[in-house]
Image 1 (cartoon, one colour):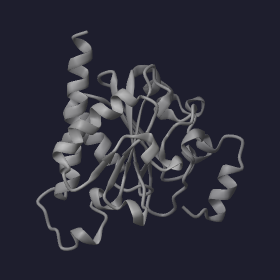
Image 2 (cartoon, rainbow, N blue to C red; image 1 turned 90 degrees about the horizontal axis):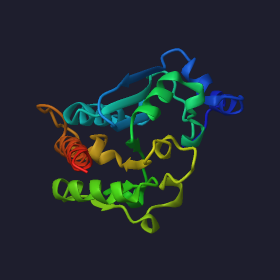
Image 3 (tube, helix red, strand yellow; image 1 turned 180 degrees about the vertical axis):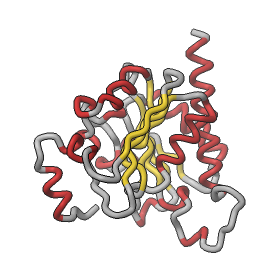
Amino acid sequence: MALHLGQHALLETEKPFASLLSKPGVNEVLELRSKFGFMAFHGGWLEEVTDDIAQVAAERSDSSFYAVLQGPDEQWHIPSHLVAPADSALLTQFIEHVDVVVAVHGFGRPDLLKSVLLGGRNRQLAEFVACRLMTRLPHYEILYDLEKIPKSLRGQHSQNPVNLPREGGIQLELPPRIRGKSPLWTGFKGPGRVPHHEALIEGLAAAARDWITLNSAT
């Protein structure tokens, strides 16, 4: 993603995430429920639809939710490892509340138009979620083997918020097509979300419900 001049200045500040949160049109959302969490800190108009996917999956599975929403006028991409809980009371609350988390992101690469990537450090959760997505998204390649995921999209940095909860989490990277942002969906008039988008949400919600049930029984 190319950086505009304002974004260069933002990243050069001592606390870029705090600077982002102070910008007009940038809002945080926190909904605390179970110990399973979904987050979309590149949400709003930055990585479009990621907040909708995370929030609805959280609602359908009684999971917790955190997002940073940016407006349509100007967007700033803060690298994940600089999204610091120390700069946000709401993010701190979220990280301290959940045991595991799914961080939803968007990406666009011509060689991975049909690939859904599951990075992050909780590899057990990555495989668990991948199994639920494979049955619902047959038109996509669900990649959870880190060696098959580009290094820049693996979500392995220790300060990435996806790795900060007690049991860590997974970084879910989604191509435009599954988010309804593709010429494939030109002319789609609903009702509701495009089919791939809806199937993804239900797969994530099912994975969260199953994980919560499994861990509550142990």
